[in-house]
Length: 178
Image (cartoon, rainbow, N blue to C red):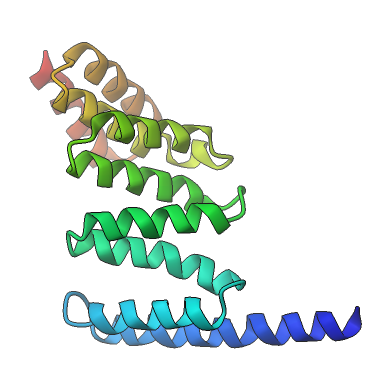
């Protein structure tokens, strides 16, 4: 048991060091110039340390990078891989479901978008991101030409936000929908 513990500790430590190097390099060479190196780095990390916490987080980072590059199908795959491996109590689970909703929204697959946002609402840390999730659902209903549901969810988002700029934005959206 002691040998396994030391092996696992070393494994996680090494994976964490690789992850930190990738993240630091990405910060020095921001998007889009640094994206290919970061993508390759995260893929390598996942291949070398597939069971590590760093690899799990790398899937989430890959999803973000792919989405920013408008590589939506790759982003969806990365977010799904993250969700398969992530602990249920992670804040990133809620964010990954929200990002997955945004991916489907950009593909105009509105039913899957709403499904993803609803999964975000069911996640353990959902309450931390209620305004974000309700806003995403509202946006989808607005694109589906359902002003009643869009207004309902924009109002729910308004009730959850404490950000003055977001409050103004949401009030404007509600007023424009009518």
